[in-house]
Structures are given as structure tokens and as C-alpha cells.
Length: 362
Image (cartoon, helix red, strand yellow):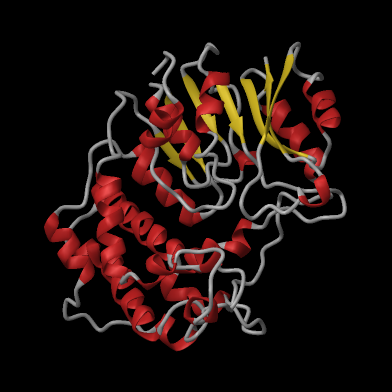
């Protein structure tokens, strides 16, 4: 995929996602700015649910997806690393029905009236256990990929049934209130989980393909990944609006999905003092006090690669600081800017314009 192609065609190639900060909508703009660069291998260092990694895969590049969240790592395995494994009819039947196991009731007992209805919580407990019990049917790398696909599909279904597609509040009432709505999709919220699971299964099955490269998914802090192995490194780190604000905390916004990834020990990690029962917070490696140092360490580590940074303006640190850091390692730094506002990003109030920026350093 190195030729000019319509914006809608590019978007339609990528899997749908409701993940905050996803670059799927602006993927045609990213493609247009990167398609003429000379690179064959690429690291997507903050991969999210894989929209940009998937774009690179479609472009015929050898892709390494990386994200520090275990829930996002499943998307990397399912869509980037995986090139042929799918869920078959027997798998789907097995996942969506009770199979005689002694099912846990953790979500039912701990998350009633927080995110989903009682019967939906029971469904989740059943399906999550079934995903883990795929180990009775498969093993090795095949099991890893089957489970990753199932988790990724489950997570997409979980997201579309949530107001704002997040888990930041105890707000099930927003789904249930009989009011005139200016946002959200009540029809999707009311669609049974099993129908959504089948819908996303059908979508994902059509997105799995081989680009004739051995693509890889990782789940690491990017500061622990060795440089010098990639022609291009793409970075889309957590957004920091200003020095007075904290970074977007994806661990907090998607704690429910992270809990599912450690289902049988989930209860040991919950902060029970909060109404929405998030996970006990780990210290963020990407915070406003260390962000400049982190950028410098990353740029130093990957100085032999083309570095492409997705960024928001206004943001912290400012573009000028980032350019100065990059010029310590690179001879050429190019800025591409596009007016763009994410649905849940309110920084553009009071007439302040928001821009998506690509910083390309060679």
C-alpha cells in the first residue's frame, strides 16, 4: 500500500475501536505523511488497540506492536502478530455457553450496578472463564492467539456498552435513565452481549491477514525496548494538556479490562474505597515530572531510527522543547499539523484551537 488511496478506503481497512485517543479517524492523514518515507521495519511504541500498527501492517511493513497494558497487548497479538488464526464456530459456541464448569461470580459479586446489568455481569463471568478454559482445547502459540482474539472481541463489546466507552465512573444509571439523549447509542447499550460478541467476531475475522512478515506484539515499558533494530519508531504517548494537568491515565480509564486480564487475582488489586472500584494505581512511568527526561531517553535510544511522534497542541512539553530534544540526535525535524478535536477532549473550549501534530525526525 504505497500508492495514493482514498481516505474512506484507508479507514475501512482498519478494525473499528472506541478506544480513547485512537488514531483510526486520522489514519489517512498519517498514511499520507509517512508513505514516502524509506522504512521497512517499524516499532509502534504506544500501540493502544493497534490502529496505527494495523495501518503499517497494511502498508507491508514488518511491525512490532508494543503497549504497557495487558488488555491492549491482546489486540497486538490478535491483529498484528496473528496472521491466520481465527475463532471457528465450535470456539464461539464454547465461549458463549455454559460448559459445566464451576463458574466464578467475581463480577456479579463486586460490580453490581456499577457498569453493567446483573444478567450482563453473569454473562461476563461465564465468558471470561470460558476464554481461560480454551486451554482445554488448545495449547502453545495457538492457544495464545485464540485467547487474544477472544479477549479483544470481548473488550470491544464491553466498550460499546459503556457511556463514554470508559470505566472512569459508576454511571450505569446513564444507560437506564428515560431521558432525551444528546450523546451515546442507546440501541447499542441495550444490545445483548452475545450479539455484540458475534458482531465483533465477524468483523475481526475479516481483518486477520498475512503481510508476509513475522510481526510481533510486545507488552513492555518502551524505555525497556532496545533501540537500533527499527527503521522507524512511531510514538503516541499519553497526552498531557499542560504542566498543571496530569497525563491521560489509560490504566485508570480501562482498569476493568485490565482486571479481566488477571481475573482470578482481580480482587487483590481493587481499590475498594472508590465507588467504581478501579485497580490500585501503579506509579505512572509517564508523568508530567519525568516526561521531558523520558522523551530524551527515548530519542536517545532510537536515534538510529526515523522517529515519528504523534502529539497534541497545546500540550506539555511544548513543541519547541521536543524539537530541541530531537535536534540533539537528528539533523532534520519536520512538523505536520492538522486541526482535530477528539470527542472527549475538551481542551478546545473557549475558542482555543486543537491540533494533531506529526513530528518527523530523520
